[in-house]
Length: 571
Ligand code: ADP
Image 1 (cartoon, rainbow, N blue to C red):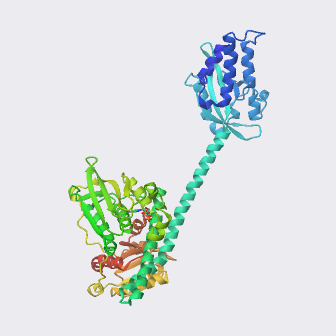
Image 2 (cartoon, helix red, strand yellow):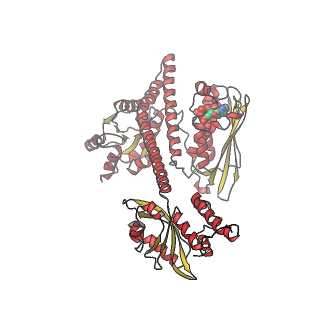
Image 3 (cartoon, rainbow, N blue to C red):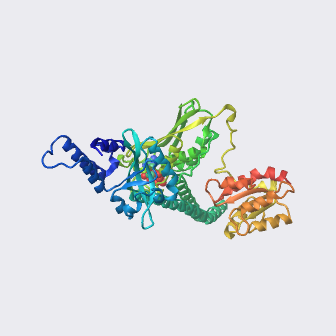
């Protein structure tokens, strides 16, 4: 074979003098040898001594190449030549396979594909580079990359010239990477499940702590007792906040945070958050201002709960880190498209401020300005990390400006949809935060109540709360007992725990709804599960309302107020 034929074939392989980087060092060395041999002789630099013929040089290159170089017959079926690298790579001897078909060496699963690619070469289609598995003498399969090009005799395709390279190492590395990724994903999944379970387990006793301390606080107590109880209740609330934050964070990290797209009244949503911090601000003697631009529409479409969560986090930080002066919220808007608006919220305070070098880290999870922050002000350092991710999910960003000792301003933007005129929801009744318990509800609307709960302490919590409203309720320890109780007599409302032995709350609800006689009782789920989708699961099982534990007296009161008119009409 002459020099230019080899050069043409190398070119066709994409392995000309400008060899591609993926050809690797071996190839580069090989090509350098080629160009030294041919280039040097071509330029007449090596004109001393007897010269090898081109044929000999080609032969020597083939013999010494670290890659398998093979030729296949014109019909692509049988091997016409093999170089020694074949023996090194596969363990087979060259004699064993020369003159035989290549195909028995190919892994059965790769056969059809490999054959198709070889046909393409013979038909003069693009030079294929493909992977296939080859059986070695020891019975294993090695991953090889084949570069096949037509062997030309003039213009006629006389066969195939192929180069095979062992890429098992690369394959193994890819495989290891994939396995590592799977392990990491499984670990992440396990972590999320663990968190969900932990959260459930912690919520159950918390329900008792928050519920019972709330009940006791309703009674007139001596001052010290009341203060201590207040602390128990506040610690319970703090613990609950922490669990919710960690759950949120893990949900966001695993990509399971779903945002709502619902119309809501903007002013109400914003003012609701401001109201929640106003008591604490007043206690510290701080003034709270709120300015909502008149250009903000009455209603928009988005996730009001999450927007309020971010706002509340910024507002409570502002109150927490400010000792005197004021906290001011400003909300402005501008259109980003005919359908969407950008809302911008700015929370300014006159507090301790943030040193410039800590400005970025406070947005990272679990990081605070310094280690003394958590001792002095409490908190976990998760609030801003969660807010950052929520804001990003809503197409916005969050940032802050601050002067140490003078105060900080936190800004965030979110994109929301414009609500159609008739989409604006009706003004909601006043939030139940701080609402007094209606002790006369039971007199005005007597209800027959059944509490389904397996945990003895939480049974007591529920019964005591109901008693505070003037209700007496019957008890069921699991779903089966609920069904038995309903067989004996009818109830207006069932307050149903979800995780119970024997028959859980969801199953029990399905059984109740499955019975054809009449609409049955109004069922309120009371669950310690707080993962997204829990509410939907309960409603899908036929329940009417949902309370998440810890259940507060006010929540239960509102739930019964909601239930009363419908439950009594179902009698
Ligand atoms: P947490 O408040 O639970 O510690 P955040 O993520 O909400 O967690 O805040 C992280 C840290 O950023 C806070 O601990 C505090 O050091 C700093 N920080 C946040 N808001 C303010 C503010 N308005 N003024 C001063 N420092 C702030």
